[in-house]
Image (tube, rainbow, N blue to C red; front, side):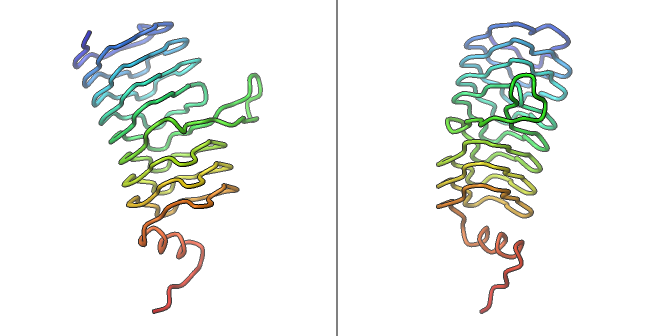
Length: 192
């Protein structure tokens, strides 16, 4: 089924198990996705503003041109999802231990695609991101905290103001501009 230009509200999708559906230019404003799961769905140019996630899962879903900004993905599982050309600004990827609000456990995002994604101001906490491709993404003011970024591709990305706090960055790939921006942010000066 194809949902086009639909505004979804309230508990309309609460507890839903949705497979092989297409959502085009839909608004998920203030939608409760508690216990909802989506498999092989495509969300083209959709707006997920103020969505309530609670035990929500997305498996093999695509989000081309969609807006997933200002969201907390603590209680969302993403498996094999493609965020190519999405806008995910000022959001947080983390996994909280059950019943413990401030204790985090490792979150694997390795099988997801973030190439050419606008992630400005987004925070990744204790995420497994080794070998991923963030190429040509907007990573301005992104915070990686306790993440594994080993051999992750950041080339072509805007990394102005990026933070790597207690991360494994061995073999992380930067292009020359990224290398210069990162070095300057740490106080290094390039001598000609």
